[in-house]
Image (cartoon, rainbow, N blue to C red):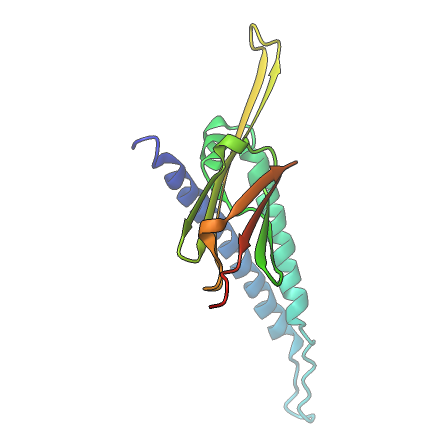
Amino acid sequence: MDNNSRPIYLLIVMLFFVIAIEGYYIYDLKKQNTASMGSLVTHSSYAPQQSTIQNIDPFVQMQKIQQQMMQNFASFNAMFADDPLFQDAFSQISVSPISDVKESVNAYTIELNIPGADESKIDIKTEANRVSVSAVSERRSDTNSSNFIHREFYSQHFQRTFTLPVDADTDALRSEYDRGILKLTIPKKAND
């Protein structure tokens, strides 16, 4: 297994593990509900048939499942948070940055939240009416820089593609990066 495919395999194993745990909890919850439903139905052969089935609210059941999933994810993250192998796997995943897209009379404006990105590592590509942005945000924290008693390195990859209306003139795109916000201005083509 080469280093490039290792994060993918780790994510697949983690996903399988989480799905197996969640499947068990959903099965267990269904088994408990079925058992409680059987004990709620009472009838007598001599009396008129009456059933006292408790109302089961599906939203309450979904909320219980969601709470259990959140607890499982929290415990899973706590187990592997300090493992360098998992930190390496998560650092290779691209994240879609939060963005705002606005339209004015003369242009389209896209604002992307890319905190800590080095402006020289922001790549903007255009093709027809598509704009693709990729960036790398890196942080270093050094304590005792000569002997490295403690050192942390963090790298986050961002990637996002936007398809604009056909009147967007992507060849005239202007960009500016200030305090973690990348602002792209794409003028509209002149009407002929």
